[in-house]
Image 1 (cartoon, rainbow, N blue to C red):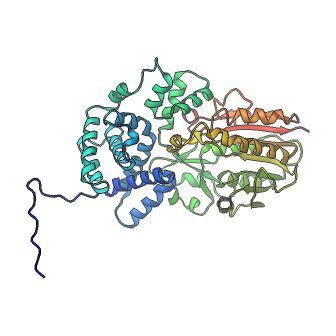
Image 2 (image 1 turned 135 degrees about the vertical axis):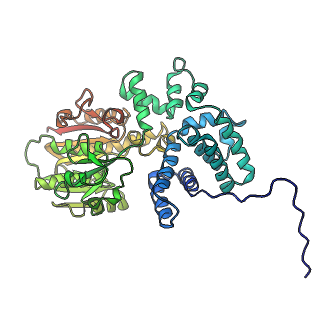
Image 3 (image 1 turned 90 degrees about the horizontal axis):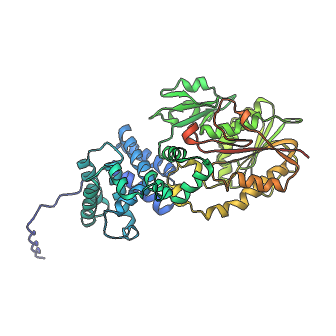
Length: 472
């Protein structure tokens, strides 16, 4: 068979193969997983980084850059969308999501990092050539060159409405939160502009990794012997890892004697454990125990007093995580898969009960920045019956003289005080316990008797806690 003649090359620049950049390709893959599968970055990113390290493509600096690109882009997504929208000639909904991800990564490098502008544009265009093709890479190049003409402050002046005209929309664009979240957080704070701006800014900061030394199994002194470890601010069991500290490198964490747990979560468990009781203190219940952080700390505290902990979790796979967290607990405990609204125990069986109820998670936006874009106001209506049902069941589970802790990782008033007030109307045989004196070293806990933690004040997730004593 005769050889076919080759087509003559068109005149112009010679073809150049796109240069693959493992860091930016990994960041793009993580953002696509978050968008396409509703995955969480804190679950998607670690295995991607681990695989890249195993294949020899990554060192610690590469991993740090990839992490910054993913989380920085997600945190500032609302701001970057407003800027990109000003640079394209079509509504953002008409831009293909993969193209928008590449653009957002590029904008973050231009406006949110110290990467030089020419390098940020060049690297983003190369990424577009690899993952999108040459045609759409030209579009990315054109948009990013427009973005590069100004800095972040200049862009915010252009795309954010003036504060005096629309304060909520101004804050939503400047601090990259949905407007309804800004409004809800502002209501929860009940303060002026300074408080809400500080809170929204704190939501966009990278949170420190906090460890808990589980009593009877590890000590804070042991954890402080690790590189980059400093004491926690409030919990006697907390240790913070400074930037670059890796929990998996800590022997006590690998062995389950310590764990990763936000200090706010630790304080909730400590407040319940420290609450005064009338009568015996032998049986404790964690009624929403998954994934197990609070249960492991409660179990260790219960063991110090010779008390038994029952850890209940509705989802069997999450109950397995609880069992893993409690494995090796020095005192008696049991883990079961059960629905807290349909108790597997007799009424009045427990002296202390914790219900850390499912919620919108608006208190943990530092750790799960993508949650702010997924949640909708109508989600509150979906959680409301479950939250009230779990608190009612908890009050039935505790004996007279015992204490229930109602906790959420959301400061939204509809998930906190509204739930407690509604349920207690139906339970006149209860009293609210002032939780603030139980954490004497922690300032600015609110007007009481419940308490609210804040990222910008306490450096914790925005945990809410109400303690309720059964009186009859």
